[in-house]
Image 1 (cartoon, helix red, strand yellow):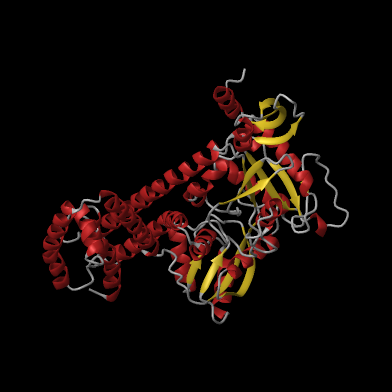
Image 2 (cartoon, helix red, strand yellow):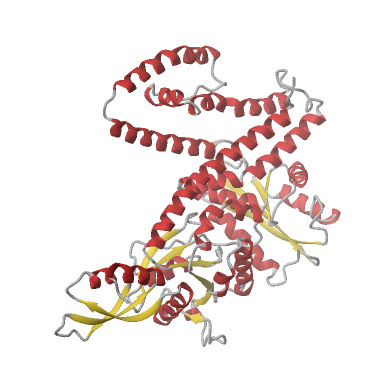
Length: 538
């Protein structure tokens, strides 16, 4: 067996190292054994003597542990330890899924990248709202976002055949290949297209002799570098499954060419390709199951917020990696006065939504949700993988779209954001409730708004914020069904305290000798129904 076959087979055996973990984690005694024996799952790559020793120890450990469990009298303590154990196991499993098989094969080392932008001359793939130069600027910004990455050189080449495997015609492709090979120190080539086909990726890598990246794989690598929470790691792992399948098809094609692709594994009746496909499917199901658990927890938090009748306002916008990219967070900081918010000039600095409370002119409390930024030319599959994070957007009461009006591609960015919202299947009522905000008006001399529905602001200099708050309040009252009412309240009862807690009290007037007052409130229909039932008000 030659070295290529050995390398490919080694990867297949590497995937099987989780079988022992499956045995332990799927059975309660196995989980107990792993926790109390302080052992890690035995990998197949380790010697078989250790594996047999582990199985020999397992019965004695588990039986003695089971006997101890029956003797315990404090069940509450045991339940809390079980919950803690489950959390630790979940975290370990998520981290293992996240670190298992990084599909881009980039690693954390330094890279010098050659950037290629195909300038499509006509057809459905031509970008009409931007220019090739601006698209190249954004591509450079994507590469420079990564630590220790730099641009070795860049080129814009015209093409009439972007759908072909080599993207360019024969002459341009030959010129490009010579230029890449002549550029010293190139370790990767970034072709600024949405997504390669597996055959295209394979052919380009063979022609240029270095790692080849498209927008999907590069942005996914940026996501991976910024992932901190369990939910972000799981969603990235899910988005990486298509890349792993593409790599698998290429590897199996290599084996077929060498005459070994159709052989069965250990008499199991499975080919290498079938086994890998099954393992990837099992991994995908495991990731989706873990995401579903986190989604249920997020749904519970949303239900608690809804129960308190806090209006939810999602702030979104295009992620700009060339100019300043912190418009959304800067705006939320200005609206809430939250000193803990620190906007960053970094692409996808966070992959999770964050919630911040602020007050409107009527003293109504609203929750502002800072979402991840959107980017052009990303496949729907990548957006779908982050549906758990973006789910909060679909459950909002109001949307604020922040546009960097100083950016030369501001119109194209607006189109991209709206397209992403449509792909997310945002309810029609939300799409109709969008408040468009033009940020950075201070950077444009003599700027005037032609659309009366648009709010011009400068979040950094805090210009126009009061008008924006009034607009938000007006929209919240309109779209949430809240109403402004004046209620006659008995001051010697808990009515006023209840209203302060469950509604927005705007004014307390005309306190009379009969211990009553007229209280002006903004209250939801549900809260008003509870008020009438609780205090028997007609």
